[in-house]
Image 1: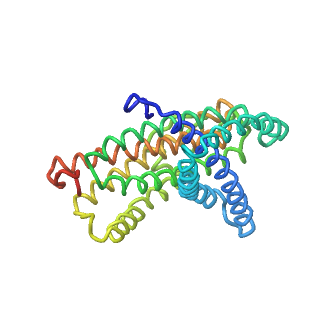
Image 2 (image 1 turned 135 degrees about the horizontal axis):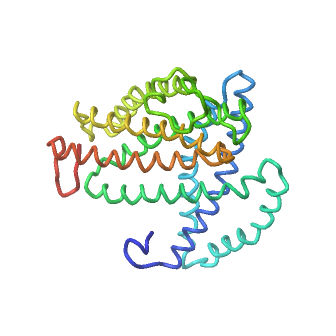
Image 3 (image 1 turned 90 degrees about the vertical axis):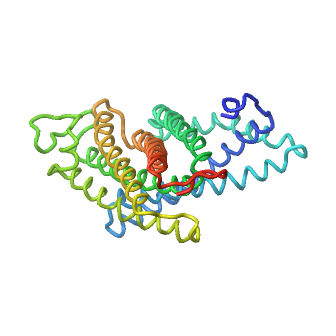
Length: 318
């Protein structure tokens, strides 16, 4: 990405980025795996559906845990540049050397064997999609200074809500049908993958009711968060009625699109014997990031065009 933006590549920074990412990914996965397993066991003990609890907790903790670890590890490795230049390359080499061991362990475990072969594509594609969102964010931040404080909120809420829906649909399919066999949805006489938006949001089935519940959480949830942002920034962010309305419209559109895509994507995967538990959520959360930042950028641009924003040398502020 650095070469794409300015045409230069620093070898030290490349080693730093790779080593920091490897250590962060492994430690964050280990910690979050333990937390998620504990939440699922505790939820079952309390007779709570883990789909409603474990998924959003894992998604929420994933961001803050990864960011905290990445900042800490990258700081240590950055300070080692010109003093211990061998440290970052050594870390990368160690991970490369122990990779065959982890592959052997995962291949022998029946619960991770499928992920070893099919889990790479969703993660890599999701990273690519999220990177596109990052480029949009970097471009828009130069114009809209306060956009960055709303980006984690709109992406986080959308990603968490669609992750809950994806987990519930996947669990229902696992409980009621064999992989590759679709159920007949309410109002249809044969199994279908593509349904109309009306059926998805206003149908009588369980998934449609869940969709309506999740959509009902968008507006109150975002109102709470954006006013928390205003309070924490001590008045630096002005929330006009038009700004709140346009922002909520963008948030509603994002979540509605994600929930509709989730239904179609999961059933499409199931029909092709792809386990959505291993594949769906990375795609959906990445699309949530891209949709969220794109709609947020459009919202800020619209507000500027109608005069709800002012421009100065430091950027555009609501």
